[in-house]
Image: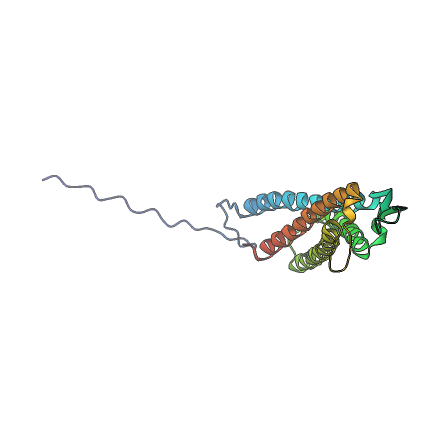
Length: 211
């Protein structure tokens, strides 16, 4: 009979030393590498969204701020009387809702510029929950400010476009078509800026809770 050789003894257990930072010596960890890559991938997206919010609100404020139109308008009161000619102009300073629109976009634009610089200078630091909560709160304020300004300006714009037969308000956009077209474009751009700030709130919440 052939005798089978006994199996080799198992290797002795390998002892692993643990340093003061709870890192196993001899085992390479990718945790810090993954966190670093995640931060680098997350920050450019946050910075791009802030830059877009800055650009959209700036463009909206400038377009409305420089938008004005003047012309001579003829109004016929009755067929028996000759038409009345008068000089009229359309400017954003004439309506409180339009003033609110311009000021709100200027505030949001200034905040976006400051927060972009702040985010750029602190991107290498460790995430601070208090700092994240502060940015979320300020971003949320900008969202409410912009959407309220957009809603107020849109309401006045609808009246200017369609008029109001019950209040005997005429269709102003029928006389100032260029002004209304420019303001409509600025309103759409401002809404896009509002959406950018809303995206910033969502990104900050996801970053805070690490979802």
